[in-house]
Image (cartoon, rainbow, N blue to C red; front, side):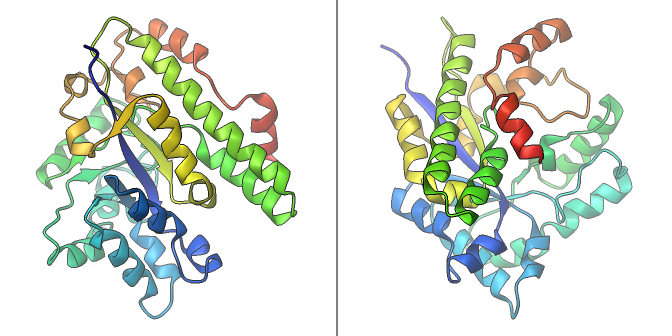
Length: 286
């Protein structure tokens, strides 16, 4: 009998001030997560709390953290890239990023166990990566990996442009393209693990308008491909996550590639990976 495929949903850059205000002081994505009743880990940038007035940001974050299915993670205070910051300076990014979250967690029975690097940049070389990894471990953090992300930040920008222009058809097209890429990436990665136990995926996406608009459809993509939704903690029990990280550079790509020792093999597989394509990427850069 085939083993159950699993995925953990993780959301970066929480909370989103702009979308909360546009929706009349409501997080549409949070409400949809509650309705779906699935586990999610959120990665918080506490600088986002300062964009609100009169403590609204703290209140919104508290709404996220109160949900029984939502676990918290630290995403750095100001979403700074580790490369260029230096080790000592970056320790402040970690510490500042947990202050308000820990206050809110005191009564909730949850703990802040994961740190996800902004841009998934773990450091410019093995020395820098080793130093910050040991520091995070001393502070009780595990580094949060991901295996799949489908460039939602690109589709989100193009989706927002279409919405602003009143072009409903184009907005729907961006959603369709985003969901298609997600499915194609899942198929691609599954193909890498043929005749092996399935990899429990960790899916990375963002607290943005695109995902708020199509969250139910996104869930359906995974359901139709046979995935069950699990916590990040459960996904990381999969033996694949015990593998060494062989990539010691600044780029923020999937852990699937970090587990490949040979640079040539890694690069060859990456070149085959589905992506948004030159046309959409050029539109994104405009």
